[in-house]
Image (tube, rainbow, N blue to C red; front, side):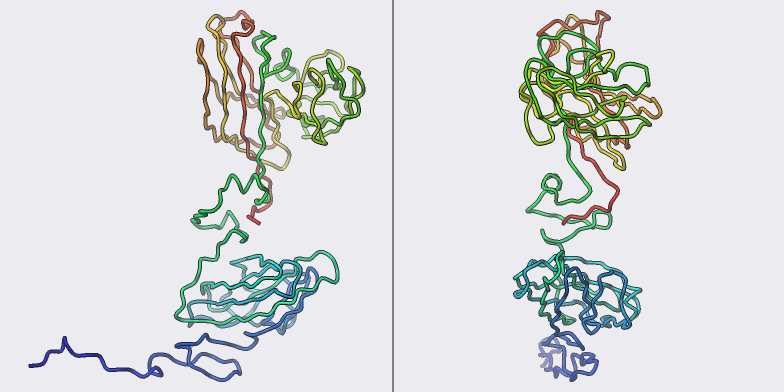
Amino acid sequence: MSSNYSKIAPNIKKSFLSGNSFNQGSFPKSNLNDNAGFRFSNFTSNIGSSNICYPFNHNYQTPLVDDFGTSNLMIPSGDFNVIKVDLSTQNTIQDTRLEVRYGHDQLLENSSIRYSTIIQAGSNFYRNYPIENEYFSISLKNLANSDGNYSIIDGRVTLSKYTEYNAPIQMSDEINRFTMGNVERQANDFNFDIINGRIEDIKKVERIGIMPTDYGNANQNIWGINNFNSFKTSQDFRPLVLRSIGGDNNGKVIGIEGIATGNIYETEFVTLPSGSSNAFTISEYKFIGNMYFRDGGKNDANYVLVADRDTGIVYNYMDKGSTTSTSLLYTCPSDTTAIIKDINLSGRMNLVNRSHFDLTKVNYSSNSRTSIFQNRIVDDSINALVPLNYKLEAGDCLIGSMKDGNGSNTISEGDSVLFSRLNIYEFGNSNSKII
């Protein structure tokens, strides 16, 4: 007795399993075991400096992204699953950008770029890309800036029904963070990418505040030697001076950033004179959110301050040995938004005055003030890292300060000592890409 369940399926000829690939003038062949080729699928491109080459368009070159020339050739790919790109840049001394374009018709001008990858010079490159529309094309850009540096690219691009594609995301790829999917990057970290400058429009900055033990004023900024102008209600723009106290920073250049006349964010560089002589700012300011040595030097005086030329009220302060401000003050630059990621507080607060820490946002255009964070621990040590994730707009200013808790306007010297650090990410207006 026989059973259908035990029968072996008969062999079927390969010709019945697969059709022939389209050929565009090339000889037809089965695509069951081989990759499907097409006209110009094997090419050599000699690309001029900063030029973009379309190898399927008779190696047409242009310096402009949207100048496609007279030919609008796109390759039909709807019957396939994967685009196989196999390139060699062995004879090239500069990097090349590969871009894969997709479209719903054969007009290249109607296509859009979905994948962009930088191929290192002198290397071999292989990648499988998914089929995403009925038609596709690729472009190659010579990333050299100087004339005479040609890119010589040997390439082979084929199609397959049976190959799985690699997710085209590697450490060297450009990734648009606004269209990026859920990507897990085991070998890297988003924060480290920002710190390493691999993301174009995001910058990490920090501000530190160090409270000196020999000053006991409540309602002072972190930190400095007396009340800062940021707590005054006046909205006057004031002429400022910079000076070194208790030492000499002769010839060193200080950069200051803040809100200048017209509520404009401005950066100004001032050369310090010898001793404690005054150096005068050109612009007038309401607020100084940062000061730093331009050339990476350090403060050799007891402290450096920027103050009102006439009243002496201090706007910002830098402690001895520092390279940047040690007052917890910050201004969000023009054409920028910022996120306060977190704040770190460490030190000790006394019991007598019940003073507490306050972080306030001030917008000098609207004269609005918002308390972002307060720490009201008294008679105890503080060692806290607090996530804030608070957004700032261009021109917003931050002030870290000590607030008096019982009206005495005095903090017992040496009893309340605090160190603070703000971690901030600044976002520019350009579309951010990992490069």
